[in-house]
Length: 360
Ligand SMILES: *Cc1c(COP(=O)(O)O)cnc(C)c1O
Image (cartoon, rainbow, N blue to C red; front, side, top):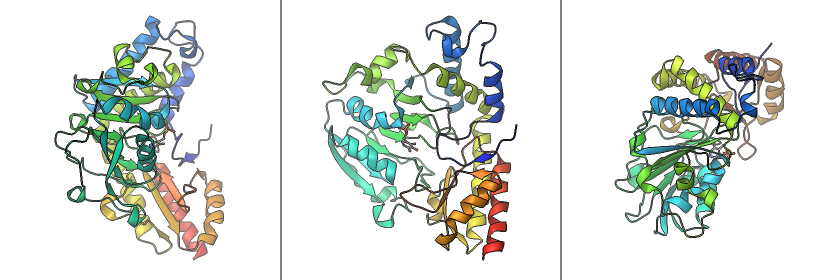
């Protein structure tokens, strides 16, 4: 089989080892006589898969016992509503930090449920910077502060956790979860769609502090209540069983690789060398301020945009695909999540240098 390097922002590459294992278990899972896909989510076989996945995720992220971990459907986009529905808790004010496309979507949805204070926005810089924490105008009586640690489209990332005092911090970690260790205890709630760094699409993981549960906005649908799912172990209804299973294989793969410290080391190296290749040329450029560059999503533009089509076509010929930037920002974007091997980044850098030489 010949696999190419897929720089898609999501759904994104999965580790080869995970897919080989899944392939070997596809039609029959460990002597059970059936596929995971055909199993009752309440069977002891699937429950063992689900419990192991949660235990491994807890171990990887060092999640305190006072937090629930939920495995739901609906994508990160559903969380844009579920966060205010569950976390306002009788309050009608929430603070949001605007750092790009995904924060904007979260803000627009939250406005349906409460007064949103945009405590900081980097829109004037076209989202190439992050407003320093000291310049945020937080409300001390906000129900929570929401931010997007990694903006998948603009390629800006927080490299430290902002301090919000006693106000719970809520994070959309869709495109950065599991890329490095994080201190979960600093957060009230973390959520992430799976299709970037966790597994196949269809699963959304929510890590939420237990004491924040149980005070939903009046009229919240049962399925939109965190407490519903927390009480039922994410089995109030049928969870996305196959995605949950693959996520479990990905967690095991990360553990085997040495955990999140090891991931962080590799991710840092991969992104450092790609940014260096971009910065050391006047043919390519990345507009993001140095201290806020994403480890996961690296946008770059060609000095001559007329060459974009040719770049993409020849990259594809070299086995490097899905490098087109998001339609809202143009140019190129290389998404280099955990599953992108370092060799894939090396191959991209080599191709970029060749292309520059031939087209300068
Ligand atoms: C991809 C992404 C989303 C949207 O995820 P869905 O699962 O498609 O709803 C939200 N936030 C961020 C930061 C993302 O990268």
